Amino acid sequence: GAGVSQSPRYKVAKRGQDVALRCDPISGHVSLFWYQQALGQGPEFLTYFQNEAQLDKSGLPSDRFFAERPEGSVSTLKIQRTQQEDSAVYLCASSGGLRDSRYEQYFGPGTRLTVT
Amino acid sequence: TQLLEQSPQFLSIQEGENLTVYCNSSSVFSSLQWYRQEPGEGPVLLVTVVTGGEVKKLKRLTFQFGDARKDSSLHITAAQPGDTGLYLCAGARAGGTSYGKLTFGQGTILTVHP
Image (cartoon, rainbow over all chains, first blue to last red; front, side):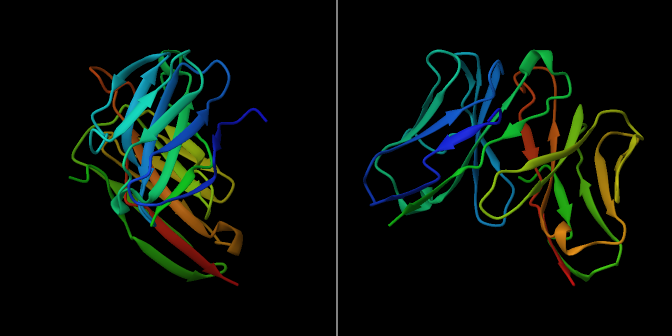
């Protein structure tokens, strides 16, 4: 399809394990965002890429969180030494970026991470 | 600090009733978006408003952006069970390092009973 895809859809990790979450944005979209969403709450910003450049990582909760987008398309969010408080849905969104003055973002289905 | 206050948090109504969800802030936004999210899915964009005072209609849904671009409302007429879901407002601010990143409200969980 032409939408944003994420994988895996569900991930169960034991406390202390490392996880990697993948996002495939809409083809041609310059901007890519990662958000974290707790159950029944609104998403909270984690980090932003413009092409391959990570321009804002102010929302990453700790240095255990790392994101990359090496070729300006697919992005990976990595969480090292997972903790129970990392359990959440991780959402990826893309937008046309600088060409989109309305800043409309299109979201993937999310990855539900459960840390046991 | 929640920059966008969304109310009510929960709304349980009967089919056919009308409802309004509010989204308020002390900050000015370049654009404001409303999303609907179903369990296990990502938010789906319903509408974007960019001009102060703008009103947009989408079938039974009416969206309004405040004159000062600090607040917005979503009104649903004759709600149907299919309207059930989590409704989210989100504001984008241009300029500086914002790059259009969205600040979300807490969300309104709407349940429409048949």
